[in-house]
Image 1 (cartoon, rainbow, N blue to C red):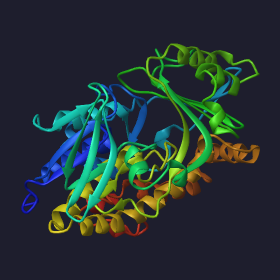
Image 2: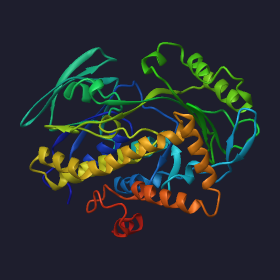
Image 3: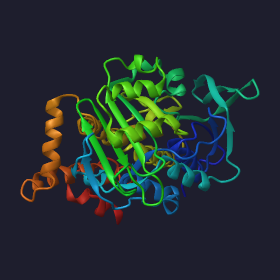
Image 4: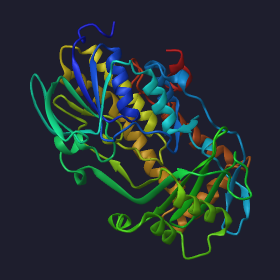
Length: 424
């Protein structure tokens, strides 16, 4: 039924990450012909830790990829440690709001890629260099960096799913500095070769200090990944020096101790490392004419919110739904898509700002507040307040806000909770 009135329409999807693959899948479901272009010369593999919440799992189910995903949570111990090796019971990521499945970015990308029909065209080493549109379509110049050639093609829709520093956003909406909102933090994520000294593979381990932290995210069937996060007063300067040397400097000059030392040593030999500034994207509009941004390119809630994969899947899923419901006008479909999705994304971006202090306290007051929160979560009386906060924020992440009939419900209302939507 979705496919009626949509057959034969052609969409360019820029980016072969989670949002791009999901957009191509959903467009194909409603009868469109997606063409995917990817800057890299080949598809990425592996990746660091991500969480997939209820909103993302519901969208993954409708996209047909949920059966290819699994929760890799090892159900191990959770510890706060210091550099001297002392440890005490701590909070794992599972203790924070929501009911996330733990996995890697590559798990979601692999499941989505496997579900793509074999005739969906994918062009690697290809980027858009010009995007011009009129009332009837979009003309895009594509550069094939491998062949050194350019072609110009016409599409009915362009989906920019090309990440935080989106080429589509820059070409159509303007330079990055208009939309990137820095959080004055750096993130360094990579896979460890094994468990930290003195810990089991299934342990969640957190070293939390003023302006810097180390989180170890474990999996039940593979080595853990590490997230180093630290505050900076000059983001641009972080990229001016060799990465490993700069990270060691950020975590000095004190002796590292066994655990942090092992993580820093592993950084220097890691095959794939995410080293980037933490930014949110704030835009007045996510679409212009027949060009639309999805995922981090449009809204980037940051890794502190833990909702990047979930919002990418949900946004792409709802995009296809609105295009199917309004087949006679792409621009009307995009306008309705944004109106329904934006309230949920706004709430999640606010959550990302709140969670930042739990990942990397900017002040000693924030550090002390986090320590109180950890202890409160372990005390029977005080933990009731922690539980209320966790349940309220959890509803935000578990609610199926891309559901065809419930887009941005009142998260505090029992009629719109995840259990209600699971049976809608």
